[in-house]
Amino acid sequence: IYELLVNSGRTNDVVYNEIMALSPADMQTVVAASAPAASAQYPVNDPLADSMSHWPLLQFKAFLPLFAEKKPVRKAKIAILDTGIDGSHEDLKDVFVSSGPQHDRDVIGHGTHCAGIAAAVTNNGIGIGSFAGNTDWVQITSIKVLNDLGAGTQQTILAGIVAAADQGADVISMSLGGPRNALSQRLYDEAIQYANRKNAIVVTAAGNDNRKALRFLPAASPHAITVSAVDEQGNKAGFSNFFENSTAELGVAAPGTRILSTLPGNRYGRMNGTSMAAPCVSGLVAIPKAPQPDITTRQAYELLWQSGIETPNAIQTGRVIQPERLLMQQNATAQQ
Image (cartoon, rainbow, N blue to C red; front, side, top):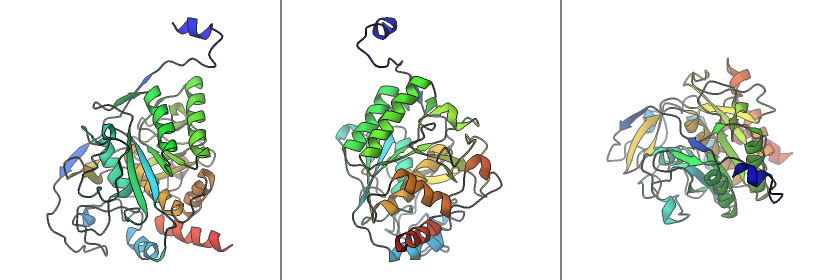
């Protein structure tokens, strides 16, 4: 069939519809406190705030007062392309909007975990928080492109990118991927460029094979922001794929080890992976998108890069995002 299609004269490209599957992730279930509790470290009442082990590296305490001073023009919409989202979760329901009932279920929890990292509601007396977790700033939605075993095909993922863009997503977050080949690269580039033309910023995980990110898709697309994972000290996570030239590859880094977030059924748990680092960046990118809807992928990357910090492995990981510095950088740019 492949040769018939190639030789038919009626096709531009013929690509095998390969299967992409999630990498295994370590998970430890955590039970949330049932009542609001003041945080000893942060000015929020989310009961699990002090358990957010990636917040210190990202200077969350310094970020909060500066974020409180800013005002959005509209809500930025984050689309999570993954295993679905439990939109009824207690810490997500106030920012969740449905793309259809088929997307609103998550059997294995990966998509729900990514959603909480990007936009769990902050200071609501429930569970955890996030950088973008303010109901005036963001909405989050799900496009289920992976099945209940965590696998999907090139076709479902590419169609998901187009669907998210057509639904008005401001940020498209993809914590998934597979090996790169030239034909698949062209298809991903076309789909992501389509999303870019619809004014969506695409953020994707670098991958978890400790290899060059350029060997994997969609991480290899030059039209998406690609995210590597670092540990709580800012060192490259052992599993994380890496960059040869992060400025050329639009590469940045975010925490990806022992990340606490939401799980289906009002539960919370920790996972490891660049899958966790990518939605951290997706939630952060939504913040400049809300007051400045026309910001482009390149402009968002420049904000992330200029405000990021160097670490011992920065050549491989890219700079580690710094939300407070990003807001200051955006303020400075807006005044120029």
